[in-house]
Image 1 (spheres, rainbow, N blue to C red):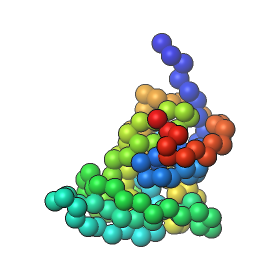
Image 2: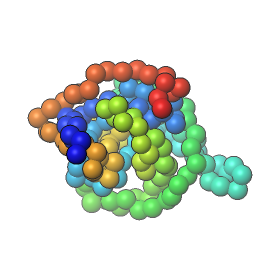
Image 3: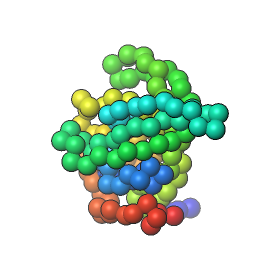
Image 4: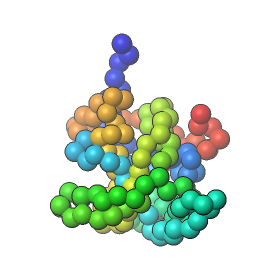
Length: 150
């Protein structure tokens, strides 16, 4: 049995399908789904399916911004930590964390008042990593080009 990698409560992640690298994420075992902050969101049709065009910024100071497009995988109601329910668009994208690259579902939402543009929920963490809330940024900072990620 392979050893489980232990991560901190915050880490840097990449979303290679979207061309996003070095994004700060909060690992939240209390949240079921993962969420990504988007500054803008536009729905359009491509080949008979709903697609989403959006802009992601690296944080409150908008040090870096990425333009991205992804096929919509779902639209469903999500309850936030305050108990507020809202309908959100979801995409399916690869995530790169601690050297592992795998697909996850991500809701697109406004997280501008949150400290981290990305929330990695328990469905994206379970069975892959342990989270130690005493730790922070346990993985080396790696800025990899999209083509470098398997």
